[in-house]
Image (tube, rainbow, N blue to C red; front, side):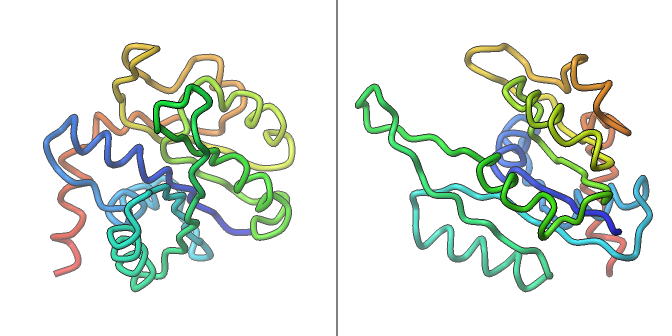
Length: 175
């Protein structure tokens, strides 16, 4: 069936800010492949940006490494302050059972906000879902870790905070 890595790009940006570094998608996925050894894998990044030129460069860099980028469309906030938000699950729901065959292993990188609980509940029986996430700050919820209520629906829950040095050293292994 294979393993699919779904990366929430904003999660890596927030974690990078927290650790004063930049986490590269390929480094995080390559690190996680040790826990999910599967030659048949694919990686998707869900990316939302209103900065067109920056988004094109980011997408091009990832696609050169075989990563598929899903460019999410911004949804205007109802409070009229010019802000917007993204709905990653809208895109993932469309992939489940299609680009990601039923029975596959799915590793969610990020997606540790409690609003994703219903997604896990819906797909846990048909997919082998795991999650990896850095602890990240949230305005509403303090610091977000993988919620304990997610654990019954996950095959593995990996706190990436414990592996920052290992992830940052992934690029050195390729030289």
